[in-house]
Image (tube, helix red, strand yellow):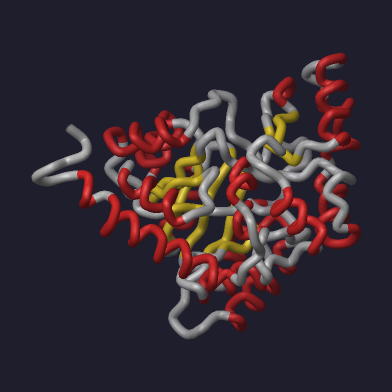
Amino acid sequence: GMHHVGYATLAAAVSNAGGLGTVTALTQRTPELLRDEIRACKALLKPGKPFAVNFTLLPSLAPPDYGAYAQVIVDEGVPVVETAGRNPGKWIAFFKKHGVTVVHKCVAIKHALTAQRLGADCISMDGFECAGHPGEDDVGNLVLLAKARTALTIPYVASGGVGTGEQLAACLALGADGVNMGTRFMATKEAPIHDGIKAALVKADERSTTLVMKSVGNTERVYKNDVARQVQEIEARDPGKIEAIRHLVSGENYRKSFQESGDPDSSVWSCGVVMGLIDDVPTCEELVRRMVADAERVITGRLPSMVGGRSGLW
């Protein structure tokens, strides 16, 4: 989930623009705070617009009360849940029993097949380009999406590295039924983060991310800055010791960057290589409309010209 970003304001703006906006459950410290955030999202939605809640199963020595969070989601009539992280079987069954549509985010085909077998309605196929946790296989979406088309029998969306209409068209061509975007929506007017972070996303390019926490088997793609380099240096010196880097990778650090200082160099924070395609900070509606128009132009304009009588493919 988009910690310290996936609040009601952004989720509602995305849904009102024609997407499926998502509230991040575990950004809320308690289940009751999640209930408040869900209700705030509902109040901002146009009639008939759906929304989702991200429900991520994190590795933790002191896990949150997942049951209480899940019950709030069901009680509040959330129509769609995005599960992610550890084996979701128990929670897919729980949500399905209550009529909730379940999208499971995966970084590998084998995990997608497991989620499909467990009853997921849709897969979010998360390639190596993504922000946050891309898994440990380092496989990009050009391969993952094509393989998902032959492996899966349920719909899937492309997640990771997407920010333009041309990419939307490409993902549809590869078999995806849509795209899932995080980093690109951070650089919108409605994103509830400091303008300094949005400016960093616009200024950065596709080389402005790096990977941390590889040595502890929880790889994360983050903004490339001195704090991330410190984490990498500690990991090189003391591999596999989460306690040695915990103070640098704490979520509270980047909450302060996002919500208080706006300093992109003050913490380790998740973002994707799609930064190389971010040149502005539009509204969510402007972004969605532009992407759909650009995708339609590719599908109805460029691609048909490449097939038929004098195909450019031969």
